[in-house]
Image (tube, rainbow, N blue to C red):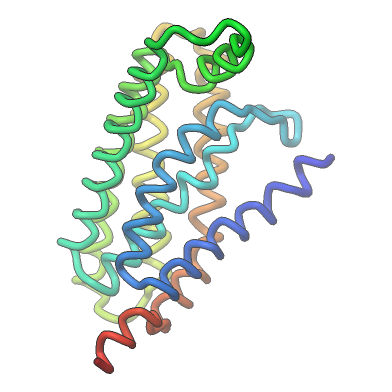
Length: 231
């Protein structure tokens, strides 16, 4: 039961830290979060846990926070700023993947071979999983920015919960399907379906949990930007 008790506080902590990053550093804090979370999510995804008898990956929480970051950018700074955040995250994913794969080419020191084996287990990626991760991120994030902008054009300043949750829930569905169809191509249907459902369920919950944090961010005047305005 430990995992069940840890999961919700972990989600609250992650989303809360994102808002803190925005509160302290404004738009730069959101871009920095996107860069950090893009890498951390792909590291955490290697850790699989069991909650309620189903297999989940830890990366879902941090990855879900990326949608909140781009939604805040979209809401406070416009569609162009949100798209810039998406492309920044995509670039960071590619760079980190290339650099870590290159690092694995080095021959390790014999007495530290056990550390190299752990390093390799963590950062060596199967081609389909890597491709699925990159494709899912780019397609779903750009879709999220597009849908959020369209809903905002219809609702104006009203119904923040609708454009935040609605855009994320739809884009997360595309993200999960794109990743699973590429990364797990050829897998038995029962296993594939179980992974798809549990992954999307986790992201769906994160999307709803992010809504109150979005309302707080909407009312927040970042310290860094307040100082710039005063100057």
